[in-house]
Length: 80
Image 1 (spheres, rainbow, N blue to C red):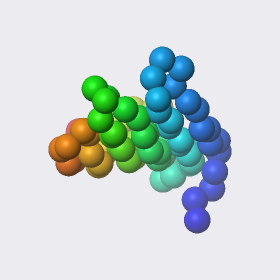
Image 2 (cartoon, helix red, strand yellow):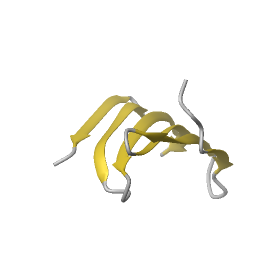
Image 3 (cartoon, rainbow, N blue to C red):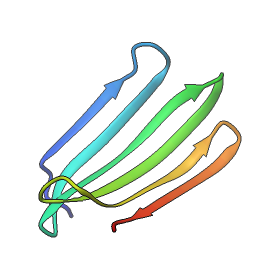
Image 4 (cartoon, rainbow, N blue to C red):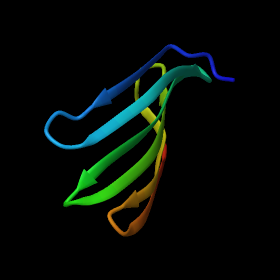
């Protein structure tokens, strides 16, 4: 189980939607993991994301998986 630094749940005010995330320390840096659920153009969307940062908050890696409207989405970014 990861050591939790902070967590948050918030609701969009302009449209229907929620986002929840957890910030944790990891391997000399920080990890942000969360999920966003919202409506886009009248269609449901659900995205799970993870971002791995070093101690200076530079992104080492990121990924997003989920569905937006009727499409499945996957995005991966490895650090340089």
